[in-house]
Amino acid sequence: MTIAMKVQHRRKQVPAIVSRWRLLLLFLLGSPPLFWPWLLFATPPESARVFVLVDRSASFYLQASRGFKAKFAPAARVAVSYIDGDPRDLAATVEALRKDPPLLVVAFGTQAAAVATSRLRGVPILYCLALNPVKNNLVGPDVGGVRLEIDLPQQFADLQILLPQVKRIGLIYNEPVSGKLIRQARAGLRPGVRLIARDARNPREAAQLIEEMLGHVDAFCLLWDPVIANVSNFRLLVDLSLKNKVALITPASPFVEAGALMSVAADYEKAGQRVGEMARAVLDGRRAGDFGAESPPARLITINASVARRLGIVIPPSMPAEVLSPAVTAVQDHVGGKR
Image (cartoon, rainbow, N blue to C red; front, side, top):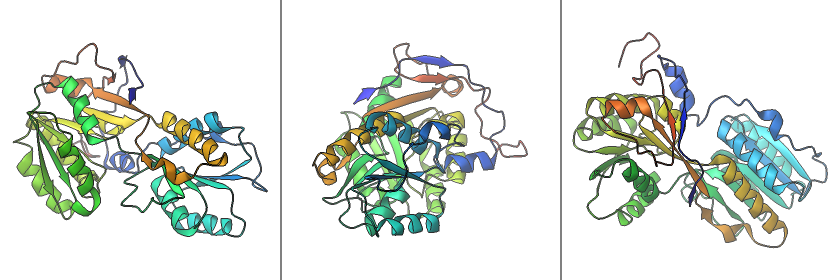
């Protein structure tokens, strides 16, 4: 896997107050889309050979679909439907496809992929940036694509470039959702590094485990797991990571802007390009399931320079990352008081 960025120091000033509403947007997996006009496929839906479903509630799905367009067009006639996160609209759109199935469906987002897979039996389906494909039943001979998560061993390896002395990495998860990922992560640990992982049944239990764990690890890894990836627990993680000088690594750059030290995320546009290559191959005769659940083809590392200073961390000049310089790093509520 390649790293798609060289070191850059971007002078981006992050607002001093990160409201609970802005944090909520983080957990919608993106910020408001500003570039929809770039994403329009100029072909009509009638007689389209490929149908594209895009969940535009998250900006990075739109970014990925732009990469798909660049790599795939003009391989076939394409119809595009943008879904705003309403399950009823999504279900109606997919149900309409059953009357005249296309040769291929390409779905951007977990929800779009899951609904298409469950309702369009026998139709080849490729997904892009789906969470936990196995858990969400995105498997089978007619289903494949690129998942959202960067492999945990890779995230840990990137963390060790920044912090070679890390020995104990904390992690909280829910076994039915993320248990397989944790077992894979343990198998990929480097010698001398311990993974301290705790299974939580719900967000409240996860919060208790955060309180217990943050004073006993060198770094903490936030997963895309609902017991831990929620507004209140992220705010708690930021506060305690700064208090206990624990490096907080996350799966998307908006978390870095809101007070985490570092993120290791998929390069969304290149993920879309890869799915464009897959789509061409499927139209040429390959099965969608041949691709399985591929890791993102490239990743982007983002570091919060202010948090690094507070933790006493020196960012190596050779670190392949985008370095942000926010004005402040403490996560505060909408009235300005710290949690």
